[in-house]
Image (cartoon, rainbow, N blue to C red; front, top):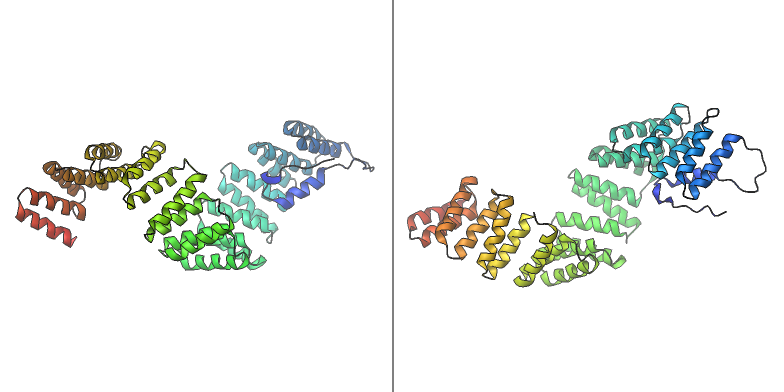
Length: 404
């Protein structure tokens, strides 16, 4: 009989394999099976055939007979497989209460609680399991992941160190440890973890990508570019890696190469708003403003409340001397964020470039009420005053801008 099932649902392969072995019935089996065991195994066949509700009914019927905590576990697994998380956690907990305290049951109960968002309760279960099975790697990993989901990076780091000390270097654990260290601001230690992981698996795309991101944060763009290029040599179909490579190339003013990377990424993800926006910004740096506006418009169709996109579009329109359209974009953004200093300065700049000096002066003045030391607003006000023939006042604001 074909017993193939999709195991991807369960991230605990050892326990799931044990479950498969425990409840399958060889058709040639000759030894006596009691009624509860037959019901349990029949439920397994229903589960394999994609009928979880029938399996649950069979197991509940079996449980009406003398206490069998192993059947509770099986019922919990069927509920977990069928998405009945609350029922699943009840059955696993009852199995534990009846003394069926295997590390698998602790893991599964914790898993059901995590999927319901009960992280504190899951931690309690995992910690209880670790008291009984202190060397259970699956429980250690599960517990560390809960700490990650809760944002307790320090606790997660402690557990990853415990796993590494007990079981030796592992690429996935080192990668996870590095991500936690980054969150804690311990960048050099994070770099060390990534490098240790790459000694084990030099071409691991995930580690190379994460290391590239960290190097980019540290402004070590050339090293980041090397990491992303190596990651793409292992697999060149990852739009995210192309996007990150393009960003680092742009930071080193290699805009043509960056644009090529953005275009490759867009071939894979043509409606990704971040890629569309980044492509538009890159085209703007290449002074290809009309094309930039087209890409920014596409990005805005997905993110109409992104004020930075409206500002970037306005800047491109100003470069094209389309001041009326630029002002329209800025007004749209200011309707979303009326006191956004960057938007106010953008509008003032647009009005000044358009020759509407007095209106521009009013917006620079209003901006300085919000942020009296803003250098761009001080400088803009000085320009307006100079154009209006108020040289002494202009000189005063030039000095303030230079000193800010």
